[in-house]
Image (cartoon, rainbow, N blue to C red; front, side, top):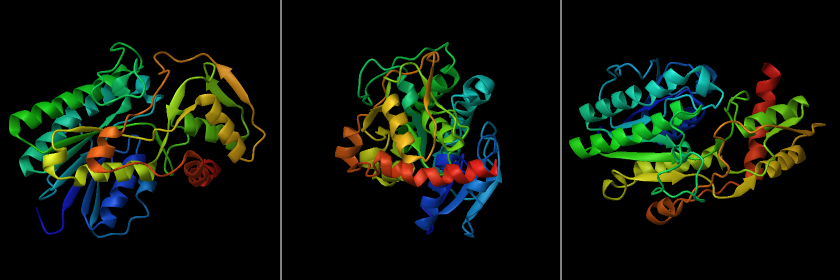
Length: 319
């Protein structure tokens, strides 16, 4: 490894990717972001003034450009918004298949440690709660969410194949629902939807009866988990997959009540039919990363929302 480690972050201009870039730079890394700005935003990187940072407009469905020696690869490129699953289905599927292949090939060429971003969506509409890393999921392979869900499952399978064939150091993180500053107000997931509607004074839209549950992780906690996995010794983490998320489970109705309490708004609540394959429950079992790597989230939902609301107010004022 070089004296100052060099990390590639794919999707570095995205919501999670840009926070990861900040974390790496703060720890002295040289960082190269590869992003085609399909869903990432240049504004997410505008605050960075470090000479150790380079942003390259690149689509990971193509082989990676030569950026010199590489020590770490964080593969976080992919649209993750449910509203994109139909309109960008092919792009999403190929980003998580061809893009993962190119990330792993770059890792193999440079003998670099790779961290692959997977998702709780690999569990589909789970029949066990909470979900453990050994649970294989309940996914509709021909449904509206399939291009994302199944391509993420394939990316994990490809990572395992590379790790075994080439004896590489590859780790995988399954990311559960995350929120925080830099999230797109039009993302389509429930917290951006609710916050945007409340700030605009529109009624909050609950799909179904609101009894379905989610667990929400503040972005700084997520980044801490990601870094914990990437920094762990190979003997502990190489070839492993870890859930990262918050275990505090809440119904969608309860989430709406919390947001209406935090935002100064006259909004009410309306109900619409539940979308196809929308999970009834979603909560991570984090006992593996907690026991093996000593990581747990620390930011409560109310605290995280209080930190997030000003970002949404600023973004929506600018729209």
